[in-house]
Image (tube, rainbow, N blue to C red; front, side, top):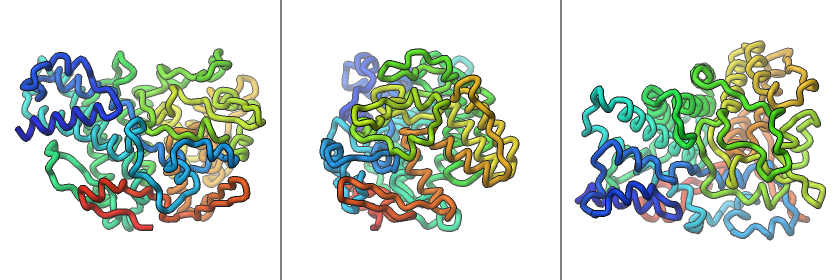
Length: 455
């Protein structure tokens, strides 16, 4: 009965504003058959629509890529979004509605299904006839669980600092399918250790390619591992993971070949550059209601094709973002991000020529043919400056800027005080402020009695 309740709870979470795999439920008409018993059952559970969604909408809303007039600010429909924009301390985070999905709930509903799948896998014999499917399902579950752990720690915890990671609060590491299990916050060190462990195992089990672009593969697992190591300042490991991802998929979309530039979304979600379909569950209103920060927009030269493909000109002379692959903002990894991670990791490790080589593989496909001049650097610092500029321009509206601010603010050279002017009101967020860590939703605190972030 306990397992049945667990499975039913997982399924109900799948349907909380999203549709789970109807095929699986149609095959299990009898309630007594709800408990998954076969590899096919587990495969269908992991093919639920839920798994294409990420959190990080709140941190995208909070970042410094957007600006607002008073009218634009007041057009934003939800109060909690306006709270994020002005970095309000007491944000109304617990009142996210069901359509938008609470980011905490979205993550842990996926984690719960992954734990159900992994628990059941342990009771199914892996043999010569099922090993391909068995490994793929295991790798997929580990990938999605680790991705949500990473989203959560990026949003609700401090940046990884090896000096304090053993005591800084991470997030609850839920590894069991028992919904009655008492959970507490782990440390940041324990959190990242679990993420790395899951992704290493995932990369070993996933296939190199799959026919359906909604399913993750080996290069995608290595890409997420590279992202994780970058956000731990583990540059050697980030470089190795990026190299492994590129070994299996080094395709870069040449923006010179994109011809449908007049459409609302000129970039293709099915590009081989994208590792897996993944979008924000709580889409930020900023890209459509606000305007792209003028100083940021001016960093795109006229020979940069992203200036054409990423932006839409508005009647007020400003621009909004249109460079996502779907109606919601894309959050997944791409070959472009992997090359940027590789480039930065090499630069941090004093391989300047190698850093520029990786960066130019990307840039040659982002600038107009004939106008592009390969980047070169005279020093390690110069190389990092160039790479970080290209990183921000390439990964705009991916839900990554906030975490980049958290890591770069620790370096006085890159530290910034964020300023948002809305009419006569000016709001500021100092570097390393506690508000860079979002508050855990109050209903979680009330139910589990875990420790809230302090402000």
